[in-house]
Amino acid sequence: MNTRTAPSIKDRWKHLHGKQKLQYVWDYYKLPIAVCLIFFYVIGYILYGHFSKKDVLLYAGLVNISAGEQLTSALSRGFIDSVGANPSKTELKLYTGLYLTDEPEGSDREYAYASRIKILASVDNEQLDVVLMNKEAFDLFSHSGYLSDLEELFAKLDAKTAAEWEPYLAANTVMQTDSAAEEYPMGLRLSQKGLFEEAGLDGDVYLGVIKNTPRTDMVIEYIKYLKMPQSN
Image (cartoon, rainbow, N blue to C red; front, side, top):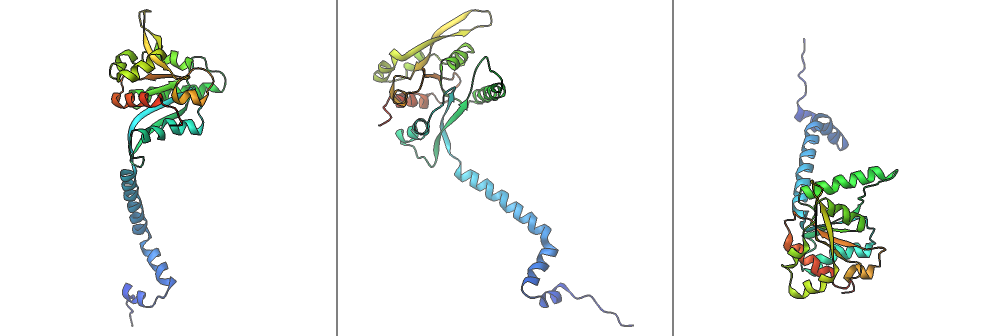
């Protein structure tokens, strides 16, 4: 009785041509090929994220304010250019579309809740340094005790900048748990100064500095920058 041995992989390979070889490789090695592709994709993704990640010089948020493309660019990219930083390696992280209110209505409820959670998380993680906001948001941030005393911050400004900004200081109150209130300058009215004066937004715009910011020096640079005309 004759017995035949199964052809070896080498023998099979010799008899395959063109697309047959590709099909053979795929049929027998698709699992390790898939694993390798996934591995190289993950490594590539990690390397890309590492080398393309930008250092954040400052975190700022627009709360209850709708800014156009030109103003948004001036508040972010414009600041990076003004301090001479490399825009390919650094950025100002500007949160837009945040909505803060004590009396949300209808469909605004979920939006307001999501914004509040994002704001609280950003403050807790020290990823919110400066807030640009309307009067309602200014009151809510102030009463909750999130904003710095700007007179203390002004002591770190140069005399000329401090003098230019002093007329625009806005006081507000912190509501204490014992029903007492503490009042001090927590905001800067921006509507009639620098970038925001030229933007022509409706209503007052206030700047507040979050108390736990670890980037005070960059906040000072931002305050200096905001007093400049946008055309500059």
